[in-house]
Length: 124
Image (cartoon, rainbow, N blue to C red; front, side, top):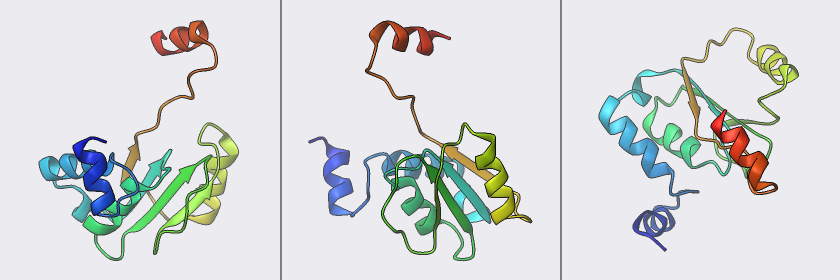
């Protein structure tokens, strides 16, 4: 277990990646100035936790992932695939007057099923 894994357990963050977003926000100080955030590929929800902690209480926060995450207070979640147009249509329907000022994405493609295909997809 590395330092950030241990710290995430102590601070009750869902992932060690929470510290990556904290570091970015320390440098650019953007979370407290945004009123709508969408986190794509948000599972397990560590970045959503940081967004809620660092942003204004009225900030709309939406997480989207194909993997269901457990409930986070005052955060919207959609279990959908961001690659489908119908997901975009659903977001527009559920949040018709929202322009998401901040878009976060720390996802990666599903790898490991075929090394040659994985390599090819990463190189493109």
